[in-house]
Length: 585
Image 1 (tube, rainbow, N blue to C red):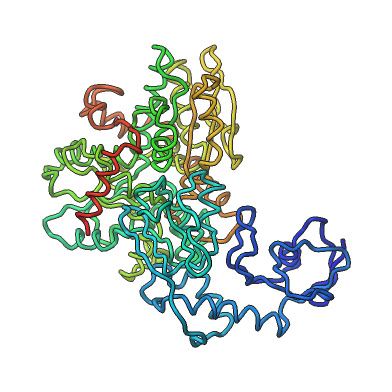
Image 2 (image 1 turned 135 degrees about the horizontal axis):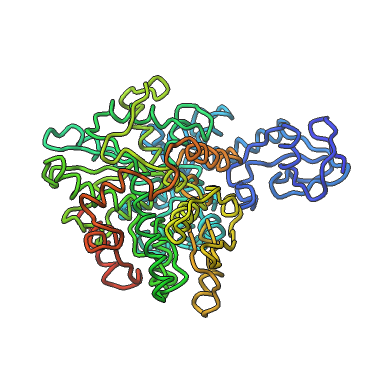
């Protein structure tokens, strides 16, 4: 088709919206509620344009371009209408930009600035405001909600959770859990994908920054930090680097400048997870255990299973996540080795994930006798701390992780990608079962951003069927098949967030459509560049077993590195979170 935008003629494909056609031509039309491929409802009307011959202005995001159409994107009529829309939104929005968690990242703020809005034009009644901060992971502030419904679309269409919905009508509409209950009493899995798409500060992560500063300044505390693989290819974005740029050694240097006593690598316990999880899979296959076995590294995924499919929790690996395994060995093996009382150790993790905050407070995560992980920072929070301390990541030198938990394999590094846990497990399980070395360590069939990836792997003359799933909306059919006894798989990897941890709810927020691919490529480069690329060949992990754990699935491993799952709907479990949030208040 041929259309004309702002006097420029261009050919576009049939079925394209005006917004898509304009972007293809390099013309920017502002949007607010729009999320490509997810939420295209034309609810906010910020993208309105003028079409020759049309009686009214039309929303570009949902109006299809037609052959011969003539469109104007920035006439005085269009600009006035957009400005009025934003001014009306601001009339019901609190003036808290300086103290808002989304300050300088708020899309409403950016639009107001772009439209040169410098005063509140309309005054009127404010809608009711509820600040729900009972969850360990996210805070919901209804007063900052502009009803764009992006969070709803992600929660329902991408994650298949439906924890929130519009309640009420007109001016009294709020986005909230059913019955306007607190978020921690809803099916919310704490994944933070709503945080990533909320254009304002209506949903943000619950910050642990102040608690970490206090620990760093407490002379009685020995403060250690572990860093997840997905963080090192994303933290650079906070300082203007291209997504996927690995800044591992600069990041270590920056963390030491912040004052951490020891800086460790979560890749180490990713390798430890593979040793335990791989051994558990082999045991289930050889001894007729519950199959398919499903990975348990992603806490949002665990929350989903416990709430929606509790009858299938025995299919989950009993392994803790790498974060929690780390906390357990820090408060036991490391405490003893370093001669530091466990109660004086403050264990921090830097994660790409908000659900990790929830996971660290689970009642099962005290197997060391203490809370295994004391505080969880997201990638965004670490970036904020570095800036607050005046530390420019790009100017930092390069330093290595501290021992004894500073050595991680390439297999541990790719844990941050969808398919990474599966690939790491296959590298180890293959060599343990066959006794042979793999000629090619790259299992390309489990890589990529396809929602569900399936393949068969031949190991020692036996055929194993595996699946890799990311984004919770892709898993329901597989779980229903398992529930009905129709599953053909032996092993399934599930990551809660789209793309895996690299797309986690705590990662830097970006509108770059290729950001996941860039971060994924960064972690595969990390894998390729490391001297050890198989978890079972990590010498530090081997030493931990010799000195402390004994062997995979041994008594001490079960005590510290494994856990249990339950029905999240049980009143006992909900009462735990009610008590926890009340005590914090």
